[in-house]
Image 1 (cartoon, one colour):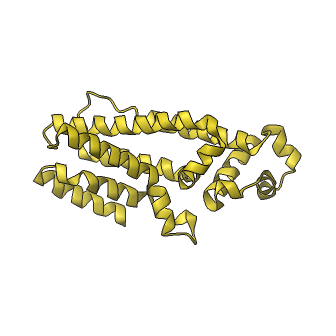
Image 2 (cartoon, helix red, strand yellow; image 1 turned 180 degrees about the vertical axis):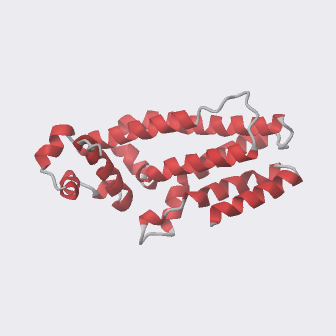
Image 3 (cartoon, rainbow, N blue to C red; image 1 turned 30 degrees about the horizontal axis):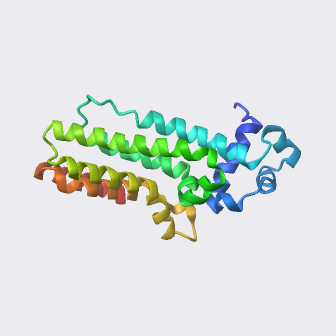
Length: 210
């Protein structure tokens, strides 16, 4: 079995602690204690907690950019759409410390602000591409004004669902369920689909509540 490098162990432990107790509550000493390594060993790999946060953000950004690269000319199916949302919320859940304290994290690590805004724009553009595909296939009936508002609402929900869900599980941050986020997103779009598509979405959505 391949041995995990100390640098990767530090990143994995930091992500776990950030998600579990919140990034502001985690110190480099807590991380080194969790790994049973000396603070000097940790500082050999990362000079500060900010360096750890930035490297985790690099990984998050890479995953998000890959996921949000939706082909503009593709005919997206409802199954593909639900799978896309599932992957999106899994990624958000994996890096949920960013979302659960978003404003404070970005205010303390201001070098990440522009990068996060770019990701938000990519989310909105990705949702627009999906909806345009559905409209082109005549699966969805929606005006341009409604489409703009819907894409903004989808972006807002994708961004803040993790915080909202965490409020229901303050005693257990790990209980956050990406499936509930997918369910909400699908129902935001439901009114704009035809009757057959609405029935299909309603059936698919139930799987994300179990």
